Image (cartoon, rainbow, N blue to C red; front, side, top):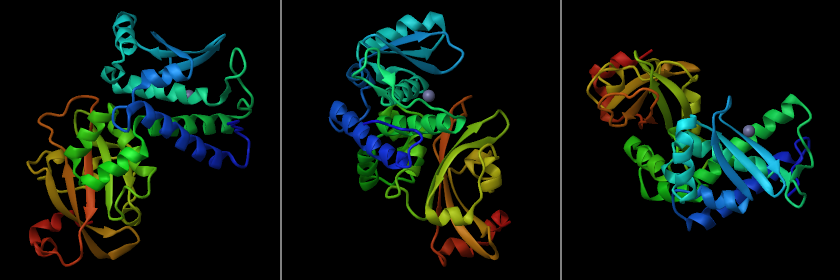
Length: 304
Ligand SMILES: [Zn+2]
């Protein structure tokens, strides 16, 4: 496939490429998780090197393929490389797995029949460069958590159970953000009335780092990355707000409709003590109007 960043058909070309990459990931994983990145790296004629770098990763074309450089401390590089070469890439930190998948994604922009491989259509503008980076993130996501796997998960499990989302992330050896992007990229998987997000504890409170909302919830909430979780889900007895309940009902007016009050169920994953730099899953679903919870006066605290 010749990917031209300036082409009108770029979106369609990337959609085809995403399907192809998913096919390769499923072939190597035998339709399971995690995706064995070392096999895809081999298939793309690439070598991995873990080195100190000013960026998370980069790709260089060399005579027989590619070198993929992944940022790490010098003291860890040998250990990480051994894990990778022994086929244990699922034990690498999730950020390294994402970086490797992202750099593999860049190789699809190269013509491998040339030695060294070269880009037939290198990015010419900042916009094209951004396009390529976004496409590589999407490819990495699809490689690490194929849509087929996500659809199977959704068929068998409650996809708004935050503890099961954690299990899925662990099985795929990916960060919660990858799970959330995968749901965001697959209209079939996220319920219309549901949303999933992740939040990071900054030492004081939880802040939203990433979210995907179903169609209906997009109409209900305006969320921004970085905002406090308590601005969205207000009850103080919610575990993420310092309370003891990992599941609460809260009520809010619609964003374009200040007269109507809607009820939602929020769930947070089991977190004994929040660890620094760890994203935790939170899910929200809208409840049917007229459910008994609507009538409980103690829930009024959540109304805007
Ligand atoms: Zn990149």
